[in-house]
Length: 358
Ligand SMILES: *Cc1c(COP(=O)(O)O)cnc(C)c1O
Image (cartoon, rainbow, N blue to C red; front, top):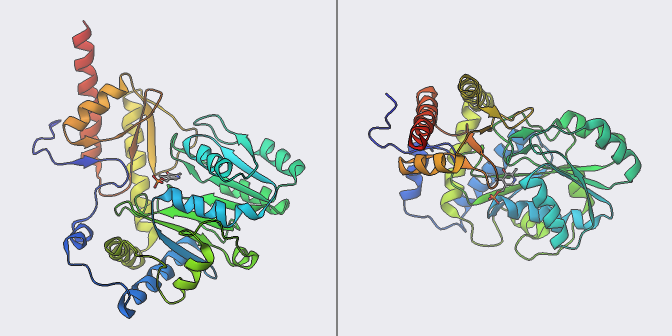
């Protein structure tokens, strides 16, 4: 029963396992994109993304790029217009906001958060109260630890102090509730290989109406927001898009529209809760104080070794650079049986390692 006998690939990473009909789009001939048919699809994608992100009067730019380029786009086109910037930094992706600002010579103060812990919101509020900040950059979900931050609280603090809010929602979009309108978010960043669960290669910047009015600076040719927005008006991109990914995105978005986002959100959550119960049964400590449904981070002995042995069996979980932390994602196709398999495998590998030591 613990055997992954036919060696089916199981992946609990980003993306997760993708549905066959969406994968199949990747094996078709590739239609030319400077056509009204392609434009129509691009416009439809934007409309559905706007609904899902709850940014009805805004815009959503799609870049052919990793998620980090969408973060960089926000930094060079938008954040660079302001003097006082604050970054919430609780791990790898908070670091990335800070590094992007530094790289582009933007002075940014850091609000450090202990890895895996929630934000001390009273302290954050004090700092923002006194700091005269123009803009705050944060993650919704810090994927390196699995910690989900409370955007109700962050947003209230920002509103009370007239601070513009920019959120990296790359690993919370379609895994946890998210609304640009409710949280008064100026810009949000999303990418294709996380909650949307299509291959990596597309990233998105959603821009609220009030941020559109603010205007942008032009510091990067490829990522230029004005240029991308003006092409978007006619359903096009300034440069060659990853056509196939646009079609796979379209298929995913049509499904989400038809089924409703709740269905996916509930499924991700159900898998997360089931897996966390298995962790508890095995006395594995979770890494996050208040976890996102997107991933479960948990500490196990010999995590590197465990990870390598799982890979040999065509099972993929995510290791962590510097600790005994493993992360299992809950996006994509997965069910309780498959979560049982990965847990039982980890237990089996650990038992073998212990016996070898004796
Ligand atoms: C995955 C991720 C990114 C971007 O990753 P890319 O490898 O650049 O696509 C950014 N922020 C968060 C929170 C993420 O989880």
